[in-house]
Length: 288
Image 1 (cartoon, rainbow, N blue to C red):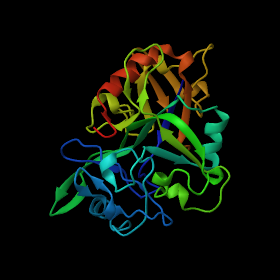
Image 2 (cartoon, rainbow, N blue to C red):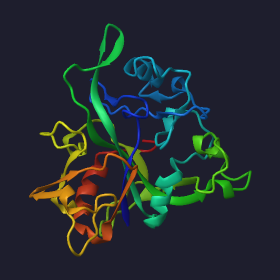
Image 3 (cartoon, helix red, strand yellow):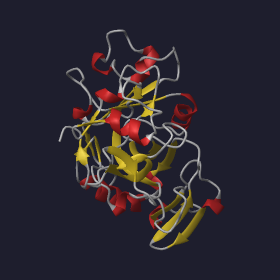
Image 4 (cartoon, rainbow, N blue to C red):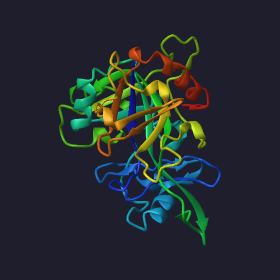
């Protein structure tokens, strides 16, 4: 099994700001803008809140409720109206998809989605980031790959429930790929069965990737089991040894500022199974 740490949601370049952590500690992921998407921010719900107002307030009006939203990955059943038969999905293309292909990502592999977040509050009937708070990286969802579809090779009648998705509304693209969630997920050497996809509804310390003592979101503190060795290849995009520092029970990583998909071969990192299981136990599976 491969683990893919996948960067998704608003950031300084796509959207112009972090996604918010709401006052109740909810991780509210804002999908990036997409002028070709048929999905509008005002049509996407997060715990009964429409994303349009949140995105407009926090972006300073750059993003509005009527703008197109790239709802991807799309993990929660209640977020948007869809056809019967819907399954959670992730779309990918371009160099990021090329990297996933070159890394051999296949059915049975596991995406963990992370993004940049910052605490937010309501002030004078508008959302704002809490003054003095800092942005940080945190894990917010997962998708265990059940099937992989090359979109341009699909028959016109295939996957009718997925046709709303933004990756069906761009230009022809031989690399345009859709990752469909499995029903269930079982980790290597583990007996527990988890939902094939879902989100982590509330911020917890275990979900935070950024070193709590760092001012930089890209300075990560990970379990020591992530630390690469001579007999196990490091997380992709992070092959230089000077990016890593081991101080048990943690290891520290200067995370690449660019790149969306970071791949790790879990067969070489069996000690991470317990950490992953601990995360998935606290998640909210799709449909629950």
